[in-house]
Amino acid sequence: MSRLARLAALLLFAAAGTLSAQDSADARAEEFRDKLRALNWVVGPRELTMSGNATLSLPEGYVYLDAANTTKFEELNENLSSGKEVMIAPKSLTWTAYLIFEDEGYVKDNEKIDADAILKTLKQGAEAANADRRRRGWEELHVVGWTIPPAYNGNTKRLEWATLLRAQGGEATNFLTKILGRKGYTTVVLVTRPDNTTAAVADVDSVLRAYRFNGGDTYADWRPGDKVAEYGLTGLIVGGAVAAAVKTGLLKGLWKFIVAGIAAFWKLLLAGTAAVAAALRSLFKRRQAER
Image (cartoon, one colour):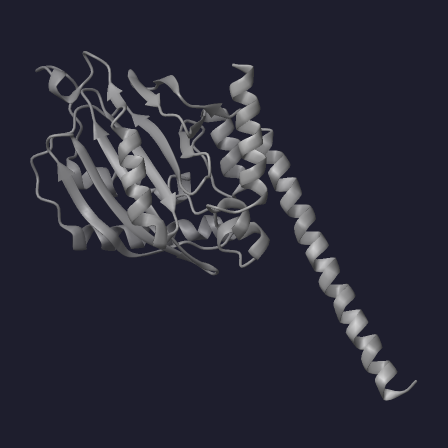
């Protein structure tokens, strides 16, 4: 065989390998889309009854998954779930937000927040949780720092902050909100790309304006004799369920498809991309027509 013939054969072999790898990625992408489409998506506008005696008016252009379907969505993305949180997102899935109510009692909001000390504790908690992720064969998650330092709004009774997370293939931002009520609080965890944080935070904030505790269970409805939580604002960030956020699934990484370095899967879940966005658009249109 001539040198030229051998070179041509090698090029054909390499091309065949590339096509085979692409076919495999396409097959996995299609399988993932099928599993997404099989979830019971609720499409806005819709008035939703939430746990903790609360209501969310889901706007048009947004979707919702109940606890059972949220668990399935999390499993698709290699995240643990408490089985209680629910999910909201825009149809494009440029961000996802997870809501869970904790009936821990009335949280007093009169303490100063030490952002540096809190960050140190969050980093330690994330590293401890990585032992469980390694056991499952999942990528490790690391808390890098604040994207938005914690701050409390006394008017809206919302405590908010954002952490930058890192895995082997990249980074993601988790924006967290605690909405205080009479008998406890609702945790909202927003997941998006770091470069989309500003837009996503503004977007989820607009959605949360339509979230409300019903009459009798608002923060202002507290009365002497009601249960009072044993911690304040700092405890909401580093204590209780939040201290175990990575392990329990409240820090959603979506690492399998967002940071695994597989372009096809990156395109699946992020905004303005073809396959899954088109599939979900058609799915949501069918759901609306059936209503």
